[in-house]
Length: 126
Image (cartoon, rainbow, N blue to C red):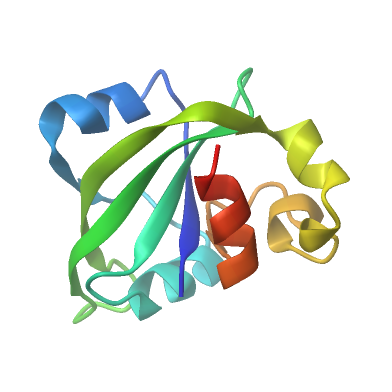
């Protein structure tokens, strides 16, 4: 299942991930988001989304490893894939009917959002 991971670009941006190559995705505390994070599998694709003043999908990453031994603090290692040539703004996402019932637009504070294959494909073509 592809997912979207939200981050404050001032804290950790797509450029930071590109520089580092890989990182552990942590700091997720919302129980619903933690549950989604713990369910991720190696090889699944991710969309990186900048929150704050940017509010746009900016890049792609891939799950390298998941250790969900501690279900409240899963350790998820991700790898940079690429930046999007054309980031997808929140306004463009909201305007797309693919996202009409998505937690991305319905639950704005959720930091880990599951995506359908069609949603991922649309975001990834940016």
